[in-house]
Length: 229
Length: 133
Image (cartoon, rainbow over all chains, first blue to last red; front, side, top):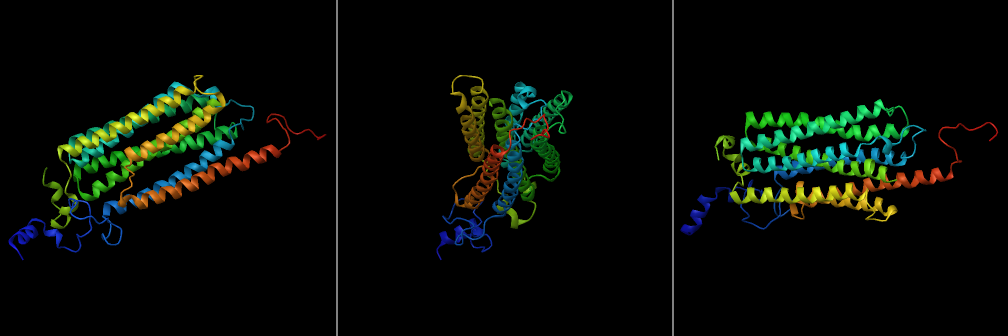
């Protein structure tokens, strides 16, 4: 063994540790194997946790698709009551969309800050995300209240039942997301950027971006296409 | 970099190593900015075409669906970092299966219910069926 080889081993002790081989994240790209593909060894925990949470999100999307399908087939089932376009407030919907899209963006920035292990900016961007999410919820609650006041309660017709089911389910997800966000802010503050905390942050990011994807489908199918008919 | 997150013993050191060069932060912010700009553009387009004559009336619905799918694509790539990397193969396959199920549920429901509606007796929702029918 040459002196350089010995030096290399001291420099990267985990190169020789069989439990580290194949854990692609953090190895600085020293080998070309793909993790989780047999030869490359098992995937890193981050990848596995991300995959599991991704499966949950997809099943959540399937749940939403059922509500969307119900709403789509009940488009005209207003039973003589008010129709959607009569009561939708395009300005409020645009504002809610802006809130949620911007919150998705700031959530991404918080992930970048967490990647740089910057406590202050992580907290700042998570806080902005929360404020925007809360504004979204308040706007939506205001919309719901004005619709009910105009005689469009969930009991009025099948159309309004399905409307409140799909939009309300999304709102409930945002509410849960806000609780989670508060928990994550506290955990990052008190526990620091431990691997487990970083994985939770990753899952939270995926969840929050998923909510925005649902909202894209929602404002398109429920509000815009409903209005365009 | 502080040492507080490396406190879990040497075993975790590799996993916790942050990639926090100035460069990667810059790149990350740039990626989210691009995604945000594209998503905002597509959202504004969706809201805009509804109230213009830019698109032939019956085609608006198709255009809205196309814009929504494009925006979902932007979110998946720029925000959720879905890539073609080997680490992402499983995620992409799961997504493909999810899209299949969602398409079956939504298209299938609309298709079936449209046919059912076609075969129903004409009946306005406010009037009950009269006894003579």
